Amino acid sequence: MAERQRGRPRSFDREAALETATLVFWEHGYEATSVADLTRAMGIAAPSLYAAFGNKESLFTEVVQRYGQRYGAFMLRALQEEPTARGAVSRMLREAAREYTEPGRPTGCLTLIAATGGTTASPGVEESLRAIRAANVAAIESRVRADVASGGLPPGTDAAALARYSAAVVQGLSQQARDGATREQLEGVAATAMRAWPA
Amino acid sequence: MAERQRGRPRSFDREAALETATLVFWEHGYEATSVADLTRAMGIAAPSLYAAFGNKESLFTEVVQRYGQRYGAFMLRALQEEPTARGAVSRMLREAAREYTEPGRPTGCLTLIAATGGTTASPGVEESLRAIRAANVAAIESRVRADVASGGLPPGTDAAALARYSAAVVQGLSQQARDGATREQLEGVAATAMRAWPA
DNA sequence: CCCATTGCATAGCGCCCGATATAGAATTCG
DNA sequence: CGAATTCTATATCGGGCGCTATGCAATGGG
Image 1 (cartoon, rainbow over the protein chains, first blue to last red):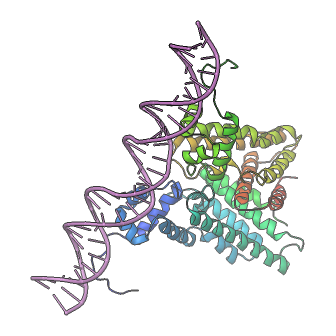
Image 2 (cartoon, helix red, strand yellow; image 1 turned 90 degrees about the vertical axis):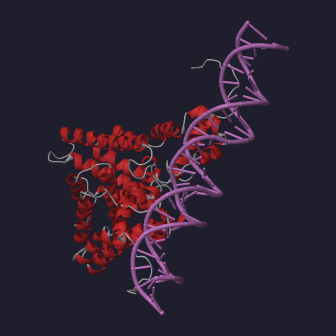
C-alpha cells in the first residue's frame, strides 16, 4: 500500500479530484455530465482521468461510494445514535433539510438526482443507486421494527409503511430542495411530516 | 382548422404518435431518450417527426402539456372537486398511489422523472418542468389557505408548510413507485402521510 | 549517467447524437 | 391529364460523445 512508486509521480491530488467529480455529478447527474465536463472541472486531461479512475462509470461508482460516507452518512448515523426510532427519524428529516440546502454544494441528494429513467443508458448505474435507496428504506424499517419489539412504539405499528413513508419524505425533501426550497421551508416540511408519527 | 389539405396526406396518426412519444419519454426521461428511440417506437422516420413536431425539445414540450391534461389532471381535479382541503389532499395522495402504479404504463410521474440535473443540457426543459411543479405546490397551498379562511382548518395552520409537505409526499410516492413499490405499499404511505394533517 | 517505469499532453479514434438535403410518392387543383 | 403541393424514405451532415494511441516529461534503481 505505502510502497514507493517508481515512475513519475501523479501531478494532481486524487482525493481532491474525486471531490470535484462528486460536485459535478451531484449538480448535473450521471448522463448529463460528460467526461469533458469532468476533466475541465478537475483540471486534468482525459488520459489522467482514465488512468486514475478507470472510466466514467467506475469513477461515478467511486463517487457514489464516497458520497455515502461523506454526505449521506447522516441518515444511518441518526438511526444508530438516537435512543428512539421516532427521535432517529425526526433527526434524520431535520438533518436532511439542513444537508440538502447546505450552501456551497449542490442541493438535494446525489443518489436521487443522478439517475433519471430506467434501463436506458448505463444498466449498472441506476441499479446501484436503487440498491442504495432500498438499503436506506430497509435501515429505517429495521429501526422502527426494533422499537415496536421493545415497546417504544405501539404493537400494531406498520413498520414497513412507516419506513417507506419516512423514506418518501426524505426523497420529497430532496426534490423540493432541488426546486429551490429554503432550509426553513424544508424544516417546516420535516416538522409537518413528524406529525404522522405514532404518539 | 378542418381545411382540406392539398398535398399528400400524412400516413401516420399524429395523436397516436404523440402518445407513443409520451410513453418513451416517461420511461426513460428527456436526455436518455434519443430521436432514434422515438422514431423507432413511433414507427416513422426522422424527417416525418421533425415535420410534425418541430424538434426533440418542442415534441417534449407538447408531450408534457398533453401529459398534464391526460395523466396529471387528477391532482387539480381532486383539489377542485373535494369539499374540504383535507379530503382533497387525501384523495390526491390516494389517486397518486394508484396512478403511479397503473399497469401498462411507466411508473411514477413524468414531470418528476424526465429531468435530472439542472442547467446542463436543455435550459428550457428543466425550467418548464420546475414551473409545473411549482404550480402544483401553489394550487395545494391556495386550497389549504381557502379552508383556513373559511374555518375548515385551524386558524394557526401553516398553509405553505402543509402544501409543500403534501407536494413532497407526492414526489416521494413517484420515486417509490419508480423504485418498484406496489400500489398497496404506496397506499400505505399515503394513509400514513394523512396522519400529519390537522384534525 | 542511463534506463526502466510511470504520468502527462496532444491529437484523434469510431460512434452515435440531433437535424437535414435530396429525390421520389401521393394527393388536390385546374 | 399536368402542375402544384405536401409527405415519406434514403442517405447523409457537422459535432460531441466516451475513450485511447502515441510521444514526451519526471521520477527511482542500477
